[in-house]
Length: 554
Image (cartoon, rainbow, N blue to C red; front, side, top):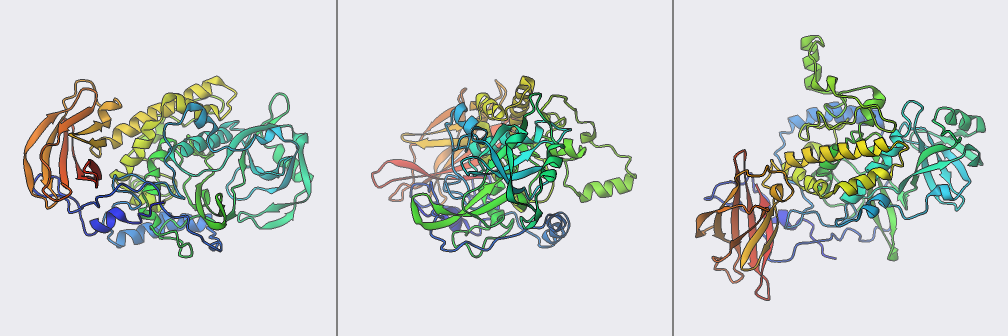
């Protein structure tokens, strides 16, 4: 495995906002080497790092009030994300795995590696579940495999369970580590209470003996199918030793593989795009888990793997269940809104107060594409990687969201096992509409040029054109300048019209005079409503062939 640590940023340190004209180049230069595709963060950690416990109310106060005030007083400079390679992409790691080219069937299956536990009954209830507010239990199926079992409430049948699985599939296909969540059906008489079953508090500590009447009370609060079965989402217990959530800032000091401050990680900052797409507003440490695991290929090696989990409040479910139309539009406490309401005595009306409502079984009434603003979406609480994210992170995330085909999205929705076909159709249509809005927004914040390749010509795709986000007939051209490694112009500036299909090539005749012909192509995308620049760094490899060694967007 290649170790890259801060390959790009060690040489870019001190580089402020890059100039976007042809006379001053960003100071960043790249090593003449292939881009890192995997990070060596699986080095042995002999003992599990300390378990972190996050108290929900305290975290809410810190994130919504105290940290926002102290952050403002610290006069932060905007800092680009770390954890990227020379092509501005995220290598595989214990946090993220690049997944592309998935079939709809693979998306439907997602991370699941085991049979559905409904095929292995009866289930034994070990304890009540802990963390979160959903009704549920910790159970073991007839094989002895452990699961978290969560239910819908009577007022929202199929919503949280379906959302949990659908979002799980989409985040897994995007590249994140998630639990093996499935929809399962079981008869109540197939739930058996273990003799030593207990109730647990929010931190997982045993409290009292769990009795059958306690189980019956829970079952009375959940929907039952016409044939008497009950529906739940079953989440296979995450492997290894759970050590709590990652810090939202800084690193785990007792994990030697954890080197990049979490608020600077591209994979966490760029997650904003995926979470806004699926409206997963419930973002706080309790919905992340780090686990100290045994390496599958080497039982003598251990390391920490990072998971996102508990997605049942996505797809509008949080706003619908809490009867709060402001969810996803502002934080749970928003200074601006609070002062505005104080000033206007609550008379001022907000756009979200008139957001449309839908009435389909299994669909949160507030899940729509109308009113979705990708640049203004808010999680419920302040999650620092999202607070620090910038347009480059948003663009990276949008490229991943854009990869999903309608068939893949529908396959993820089908995994929710909705009883009403209208739910599958509606959620698919809404996700596609939100996808279009999100990608169009972020493709207009950064020059959307990608997939660079060089031989005798330098070729690239304008993603906004190739993916249909620029209206047919919209004039687009590229202003091109060429420089050597020292930043000296080596060719007269030129203008190149965009190819109709978005795949444009230009001659690469003038190259730098360094032994490896290091050359910088400045390509400025110009449209009637947009202008942005990308710097493409190329050099000859040891065999004499040209290759792209770095990309820098401004």
